Picture 1 (cartoon, each protein chain N blue to C red):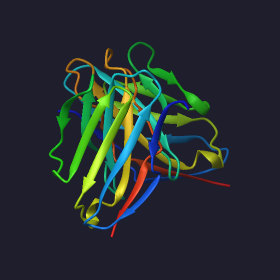
Picture 2 (picture 1 turned 30 degrees about the vertical axis):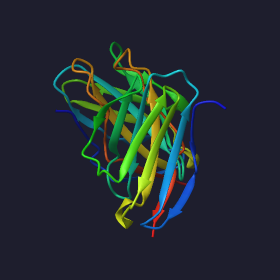
Picture 3 (picture 1 turned 120 degrees about the vertical axis):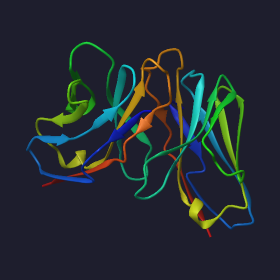
Picture 4 (picture 1 turned 180 degrees about the vertical axis):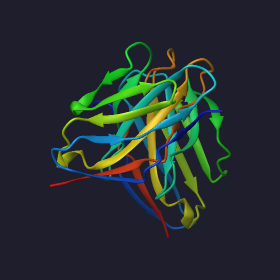
Amino acid sequence: ETGVTQTPRHLVMGMTNKKSLKCEQHLGHNAMYWYKQSAKKPLELMFVYSLEERVENNSVPSRFSPECPNSSHLFLHLHTLQPEDSALYLCASSQLEEAYNEQFFGPGTRLTVL
Amino acid sequence: AQSVAQPEDQVNVAEGNPLTVKCTYSVSGNPYLFWYVQYPNRGLQFLLKYITGDNLVKGSYGFEAEFNKSQTSFHLKKPSALVSDSALYFCAVRDGDYGQNFVFGPGTRLSVLP
């Protein structure tokens, strides 16, 4: 596989469920990101991991819990979500050394919270 | 602080006509500017970027963008639009001097009519 992959592509969960989103990058990058994309809203940066350390948490509720076990994998653990958390969740990666390096995005996980 | 504006929610253009998608930005330092495209149910796909030098940047699929420092703009252009160019387009900026995160614009939906 090449690029950035995300699984599952679609997820429907109840508010009391616990689930996890997975992201894997095959580009040798050293930074990974979680974004939330809701209808008619700008892309929201949720978390940034640099060299497997979390460097940014943009006031994201604790019901979202990220994990970065190594530089190629990123998870987003979900528990007791709300219907307003329904969105497309995008993972991205980049190489940190130069600020002009672009981010590469995965296809996203479409999450629906019932 | 960094910010990006895309003043048009929607741009409609006839196939074969030139297209322009507008972007203006604000950063404290030197800007690195990016354009991404998103097709339905897909992640963002990198089109092109401006780092320094020539103000006209050429990218994928025949797209180009013009950097204008005095107007703080980075408009995306294509000489002849295709129906397959219909998608959501995002402009993004990163401050090259202060190394902050990417900031994305709200997106512009381009519809190319046959």
